[in-house]
Length: 349
Ligand code: NAI
Image (tube, rainbow, N blue to C red; front, side):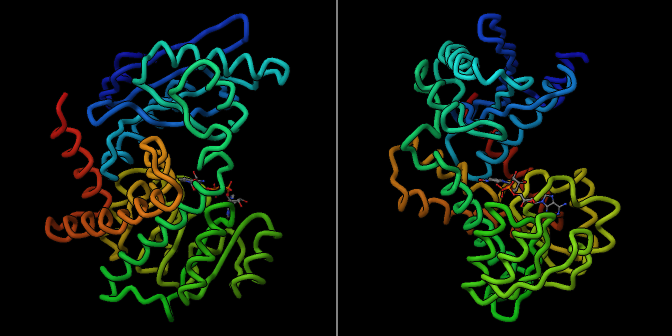
């Protein structure tokens, strides 16, 4: 792998390799862009098959955070830390304290938090060494419940804006939403949609979660591979990334795609193809930003109610993206990328 080339490709500012033999830490911190403010983005632990895979993941995830913050109007940039391998449980605290010391040397250029595979206890260990960490014990996002609920709330608001764009009204009565994935976010989303009168079709590989949604929200269920072809107004991916691809696009029978999953488009061209097929795609990082908005709000001293209020700006953000897509005659996915790029170019270097 050519490191400079990989960094230049997405104009990544900084790549930090952290090694500590004492704790066994091997971590990569990628800072994609700090033009709008310090880089914000959680720390992921994954058993990567190679260093290259870990570096590429860090670069990709950090860039995603830059775009999410920029399009959400947050005064933060994008960064991400990834820890390679599975730390020995006996040395786990030492690993995170070591990471905390590396983060401390960066003097606030990067602020970490929970991501895949990391916990509030891990962030507490980081907190022993640096203040540049969120999601510690007692914080709003510590359990993940509030973050997931606020992510779902933002997606719910995004769905309403998309309905207004397509049908001229955001009334959810008589609207059918097909939800893929009934995890933390998907289940909160079903609750918001059901309360607003929507009909639900759901799918999950975990049957217990499907049964819960059927009982709680009167949802009807389909097999996981049938959710793409479900006749509905809105298809809401809340499980995996990359699910809008050459295989699934032709199956869709919806007018809108709007969900929580990160990186839903397998490739950027799939956003253009959706637009060509007359399906409005609500860009994932525009409407699933509830979690990061809440984190940013807490860093600025807000309480839960104030943070929730800030999530409501997702409605205006999504409406702005749809409007520029309409006036420029381009796919909403491209309009969102352009908006983020403009904010980054417009910010002082
Ligand atoms: P989760 O792990 O709690 O739930 C994921 C659900 O998807 C599980 O119920 C799982 O059984 C199901 N699933 C897995 N493969 C499936 C398949 N092939 N078909 C149907 N269902 C399948 O995850 P969570 O936190 O609810 O997140 C959902 C998505 O939203 C993820 O892509 C995540 O990256 C994204 N996201 C989550 C945020 C959060 O605050 N939790 C914030 C922003 C994005």
